Length: 359
Length: 169
Image (tube, rainbow over all chains, first blue to last red; front, side, top):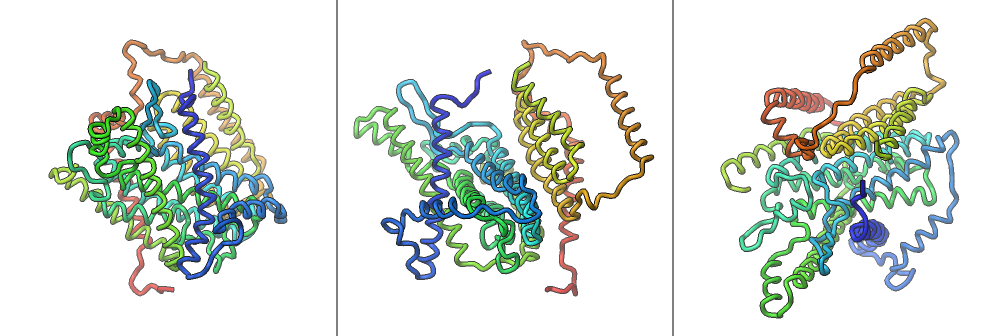
């Protein structure tokens, strides 16, 4: 039995891993810069040019702080919690198709960690495991505020997973596949007008993005770490790099959620007129088809990251604009508004597919 | 037998034992989650990707979160654990032991059913094949199960609905 990830594909996995970490690192910087921008402040500008070395300074600070264990804490699980949060956050980016493929001679490198035909379910499964990191950490701290945060996180994640899954079903009804690569490729077909899924699933996208905010515990749904009620929520007792891992995991989750939304609803690595551009490169600039395709792939990769950064900006924009929900409002929104809406969306999509309006 | 299978089975048995032997109920739940993971690994080895993913989502991701949730709420631990009388322990040991005996007796002479490599369809566990089987051969049971789940979901939404005159905090 040979392992499927070796050679070039292994490099892609490593690169995905590295990029996830790098983006999470600079999200901490971007969050503060955007917060400063939205609140008309200066923001971090001391470490390096434009404060670009701020994440490095933060890392030094977090690593050198005191490692603190609260009295009566379950030490093993106290350490295991943040590790688990980090592991689950990093695992989900493996199946996201960041680009089409690059061809060098006979070697074809798909810019995707692993292509599995249940890719969407894989992401969904890993996301549903993400809550364990928070729950275990919150419980092991032996602090009632941590425990309340952990319990809020668990019920919030379960409630919003339902609506998220139902919103996803409408997309799957159109695509007929669970593979993220297939879903991306279907959103652009050479030689005909083809719209991204956002044009066919506006309601589904709205439900999905609200659920994505809730699943990543971002404001306005950051009830698990609501500091006005719970001090710091599940990470009240955490300090030093264990605390850093929780914050990091949140930013990686934001990155992955942005990537999944770009792939499902905004065409992934497709961009408008890509086939025309490829044919123009071949016919007018005299490039070989392979080279032209590689250029399109790289442009698509850049385009996808543009979409992802736009979504990350949106996440931060919302955080510094909207106040936090109350807990009962959050639950009511999930169960009595989003789930019925998602079921309605499924019926609507089914009807439109049956009458041939969309496919 | 592949080394991966042996490793997964080893971890599965070890973590299943951990579920029973752990003193702390939270540890038991975590061991149970690990057991589900190794089971998903087995499904993957059998080329059943869909089943593996759904096992993680439903069991490890949703049901076990609720287990953990309830156990954390109840704050069960060694100090608050009620001590059962010796008679109950004795009866439980006998019941469990006889179940083991029956299982061993039933499975003693079973040999693993082979498969015919010529006619075996390696895609049988893939999601589209599974969907075909579910909707073609088992359409009625499938739909009945889905109605049951829908009823449960509607019920939970109804329970959470605000009633007229209820205090709005």
